[in-house]
Length: 143
Image: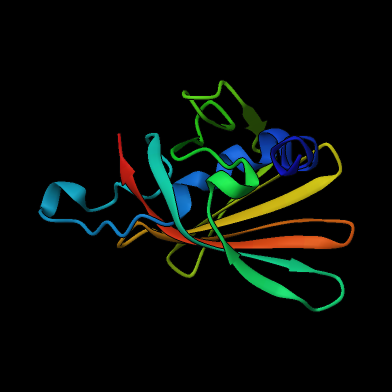
């Protein structure tokens, strides 16, 4: 029952955030600039917190909220998608702000924002709708 509810609530918007939590750092000079959105990135959520409007928050797993394990953030194609689930969410806004790539979108009554460090690939994201929200931490690696 929980999976069906999560599917309906978060649909394609969650696919965007699976890429958020893997801790990846550049290992050589070739990685420099790899997180600026000029090429696709694969992201993985590691830490996910679910919060309700009542103020109750709890740590959850990607599986428990039907979030794909891997998300591809493709700024050029203007979408975040999961190849494993075929879900996708359109990117509606891209901005570079203080060394971070800020990517935003919305779909099916939910809004999301993804912030990726252009230096390290570390990321954080939020997904919000009526009465609940998610905060996701992770990282991305260039494709």
